[in-house]
Image (cartoon, rainbow, N blue to C red):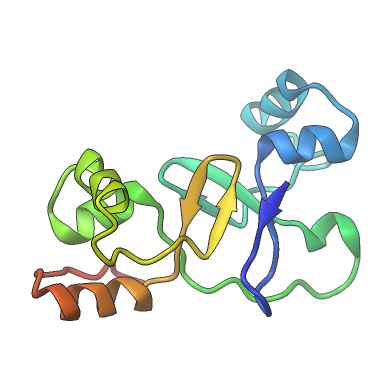
Length: 132
């Protein structure tokens, strides 16, 4: 399933939903692309082009949802640092102080913005923050 930081809401992707709901991944894709919001609500965030949802939607239906802070993935981080996505991936392989992912949904890494601001400060790299 997913990994979430302590005290932060858990996120799920389409494959997670497929398993949770007992539906094929193709059915989940169909619901999403048809806009069948009775079966699949709009995503709570889209990270690097991939939709993610708060798991609490299914764990506690009808209850207020936790607040999700602004999140970014590899593509958004690359844009913030004006590099390509491969460069961001290389930062992890080189273990040069890039922040650990705060969430992992499947193979996708997800962060809030403050760890990247700190990374920019420590490494002297210029950063352009996304508009909120």
